[in-house]
Image (tube, rainbow, N blue to C red; front, side):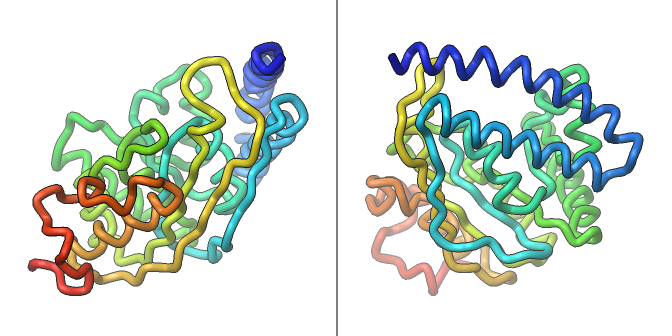
Length: 251
């Protein structure tokens, strides 16, 4: 039965997304606020569809503050990439460049407000990331990033990508960490399972911390729903001693 529901979801969601993309291209003629409203409507549609067809609903612990923030999110499935648009009130999103190059869809994401990142470009990519991030916060929008760099299976907690610390330092923004456990119900592939996907919004982490401390704190917070997060192997820098206090980082 759940396989059938998963198929029905796919047969509705993807054609509907094509319609939303076409409508979004038209919406760009009316300005960025209209474009962001339409994107938010699309994510709300997905939330309702997932609940009705798949039996999946979100449960949010905590609240994301308004305004310019750096929002760091655990990434386990497509679900949070859409749901976070609603929860964070249409933030600018850091994503891999390939997604921004998809015909029509990619153009619409750029009009909405994304920061495409070329993972092979090294320091040049970081400079572009920082410049785009500063432009976003000048508009009063939050910047959302998945600091582990890619989607990971439940239970895994890889180290953070180096670009996160560089962006944090350059933008001078506090960080709102968000833990997610969506991979339990929404793995890769067609089949989805019913249940509750949790979003745990952590305490705001202030700007200006040393690299080791900000990585330690963000890594722990976004893996708060991960049963392996407390193990020494889950630390963002594997050579760090687990006995070292995150308040006393090596500088």
